[in-house]
Image: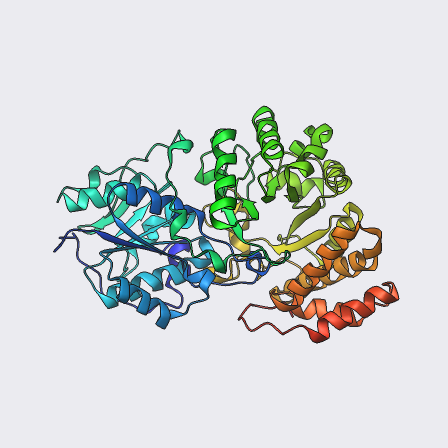
Length: 526
């Protein structure tokens, strides 16, 4: 049993092996696209995020003549009885789910529930983990998975369903894997979609009222994409592997027109840009900014980009702000050049400080993260990283536990230090790697202390920020104490903030005492 299979197997009930070949008793007409009910309290603490991949796949399925239910069980915070009811009420002929690594156990459980409701429902799983670990998923005893979609799904999933409806051999469909006659069949890789402007999106299926950005009052949040792919070589990341170091982009006109439509038709006023490297092509990015300024789209953008691209764009940062870019995440990831080189980030330590300074100077919220818990980690090295984070001075910093994805380039260097194969813990919050000189519990404790120390300093200097950033940071504090895995640390910080200005400490104490406590089951750091 491989590493992928060991982790998926944990927590699942052994089932009997399914039939070697599917024989459809009826045509597939109705497809449910369902997210898994997995929660860790990381990105979801900041907002409720729709599944953009399913919005596009739903659009492609409808264009191919299928009836679709886009069901975001994760964002609705639905549990298994509610999921069972939704599946039963819709009565689909096929169910497809999607899973990043931490959610794959729940994804398999979802498809098992589907088979319990009706064994004839065709079950499909996709996304990064399934793309790379399909063999283990399909070989697991009693797997409820009929088919794996490897790579992009907009063309592959309709092609698979059309093939099944025609009674043809699914081995003819590119980009899938399935179990047959005692072995796994993996077809040739499907080509990446070149014309992203041509993809239909089923925005009308989105249950819009549930999606909001918690730091902004009366917000309606969309996830959007202006490009797909990543050309970088980061050794701990899955995206450059999934996209095979390719990059494709929508036209600026098509992308900005979509933003305008989302604002006018659905009331979207905040959008998270899902791109890994949206600013890769400077001329194209400048055109996007110009269109957003000219058209006054009415949508604020939250985005991620590269440190070196911010340095490249030092002369146009005011245009970022004028276009509505309100929040930029840049991945610093490490405090030492040696670790950056191991991560293959392609940047220098000193560049990160300059990039964050540029973002701050444009009065844009700056955010970064540091990946900690490598085998050589110590309490002293974590403390040094916190001091570096304070020196960099982003508005927000998160201290994350390295997750050893079993398909990542870095995995061979980490595998001897992997302490658990329960993928539910591979969420960047719970330590999975045991450093030589620390226990997992010690790593977890130090990660919590790191966040507490950073935000103690940040709120101690709150009054130095611009008025709108002060308001934003207070909203962030309310989020952290009520809707995140850091709730305990933030409440303790408010009580022990002797180094903060008196008025700031009193304000944070009032907020921590009056706000509702989190009702949701996140995994807090001690």
